[in-house]
Length: 169
Ligand code: ROI
Image 1 (cartoon, rainbow, N blue to C red):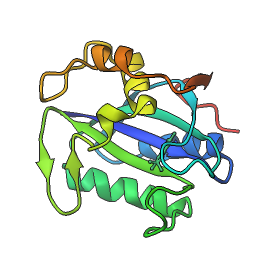
Image 2: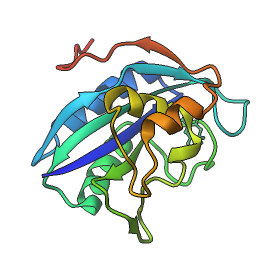
Image 3: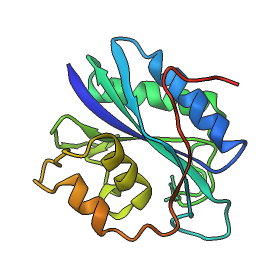
């Protein structure tokens, strides 16, 4: 059994619903169990500011799938949501699903870098991670609680709870 943390983000096409639907799809992944979700957060865009605010959340998954198989499933969920790949790397997106951590593994290949390269610089990742796992330690020994309490919140705020099992509209 492996523990995977997934970052979810959306700023187009009803972001709240995109994130709820994505969590529902993640909960249906084979050989996996969605064990915890953070609150749903409002966040200011990182990168170009001429795009809508984001909704972000993180989820904790137990899985028997390999990292690349998890990635395949997440990309299929993104594609189903209408995500167009090769769009502006820093631009608005319907749905972004990132593998943040896979156990304590360090993964570096052409499809995947874990821990996620942006993890330590993103308040919309660190603060929700600290919410659901306050004793989490990164592979390099950094404590999530320390990182989360030292990063500027940049307007990040809780929008609503994501109770699980999810209430689908
Ligand atoms: N900014 C915020 N606030 N949330 C995101 O999920 C997000 N995702 C991105 C970029 C464009 C870096 N900015 C973001 O990919």
